[in-house]
Every structure is written in structure tokens, then in C-alpha cells.
Length: 146
Image 1 (cartoon, rainbow, N blue to C red):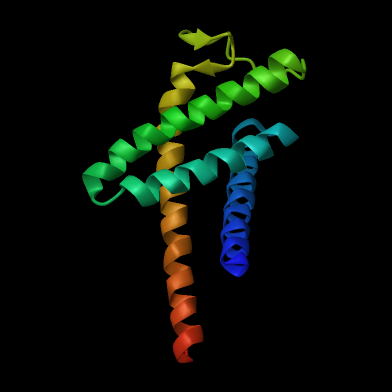
Image 2: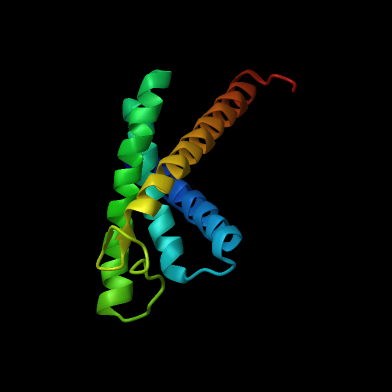
């Protein structure tokens, strides 16, 4: 059982690192700079999004619903990290107070709607990762030449 638990832990860490890296890259493209807290937030949100995709996405209709749930999750992660890093620690990583419909400058409706598309992207990446793993596993098990 220890080996199985180690595999699960490594699997979660691999997804955490993938999501963290993807989010930092996305933020660098969007804002031109990032902060280490975004690495932590991105990894945390990605792991949660993967759980949502694998639990709820069974058809195209569920994909959109799951992306909306994913946007709520990303918004919640953003709020928690915003309270910790921006308000409590005073790092001022971001400030949404200039947006209408914001909550203490840490989350805004504008970005919450944008997170729907980020969640869709995360689902697509995870689908690709699962597909690649399935092919590589088949190659390894059956020694198929690619």
C-alpha cells in the first residue's frame, strides 16, 4: 500500500507543478510579471480543477458546467491567497479595487468570468496529459513501436 500511496502523492505533486507552471506562464503573458504566491495559487487551483474535470465532465454539456464550477474554485483560491498575501502580509500582489463588483479588492466579477475559460484550458491540458499517459502506458506494457 505504501507504493500506491507514494504514487498518488507523486501524481498530485506532478499536477501541482504543472498547474503552477502553467499559471505563472499565463500571468507572465497577461501582466508581464508574476509573484511566487501565484505559483502556489496556480498549483492549488489546478489540482482542484483536475478533480472537478475527472469527477463531473462526462459530456460536452457537463464541460461548461464544470468550467463554471472551476471558475468558482479559482475565485475562492484567489480570495484566500489574496487575503493571505495582499491583506495579511501586505505584499500587494494584485488589487482589483478599480473593477466594479469586487470584494475587498481581491476578487472581481470580471476575472471570475475570465476564470471560466482558464478552467476550460486546464481541463483540455489535463485531457491531453491523460491521453499521452494512456498512449505511453500502452507502449510500455505492450512494447508497441511508435
